[in-house]
Image (cartoon, rainbow, N blue to C red; front, top):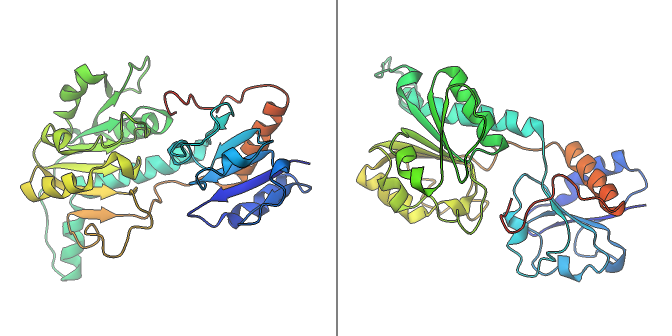
Length: 312
């Protein structure tokens, strides 16, 4: 009977319990502040787990993230680095992200905020319109989600380019590839909308800063569906004030929930969504966790285990 702890400092993890019990009726689930005997816990499913807790579990064999990212776990300075740390791989996550990113690009490029304002005033008012092919969308981060979004936007007719740290062998039709620091300027210069889907690593923290914004075409639109720590918030507000950026659509923030007094809420140039670009079904989380634990107990390394040196 596996013993699995559901650990988070910011999320009520009870919502996962039915899925785990459906897939393993005899499972020993540990939640909340009283985890029982710590030497019985085999696996920990985490979303911002309390720092130091994972290191206190002597028989822990697997650390499982709730999502594709693991930065919320690797931020723990006492993380046991010898343990396999796995991310979620969910085909439906790419579907959800594609829908969100396409919406974010389209609502800005087709000037939907202006139409909503006109509708609120009951005014029939047209805005200037240009075809998607004249709007250049850049995807920073060409992992599974980034490639899916690039392909979807290209299929709609947008001029799509992608950037990654290393070269990608095969890109979707209609997507131009750039890679490495040497090609970053060329990539950024052709982004009317920039979409951030990078993993969060020490190298990408603060990636979206004043220096980067200055290298975008004037009036560019920013979409951040990566992590809140990718963005230097003060630099974004300054770029908007200067007109270097015209708008931002943000789904991830350094502090979540976003505090009510945060300046992003009242800024008409910024569209805030509450980290809902995509979600993983609880059944997928339970199934992959139990599968990964079984692999580890057989002495095998799960294919979703991350490289801690790279952070993804």
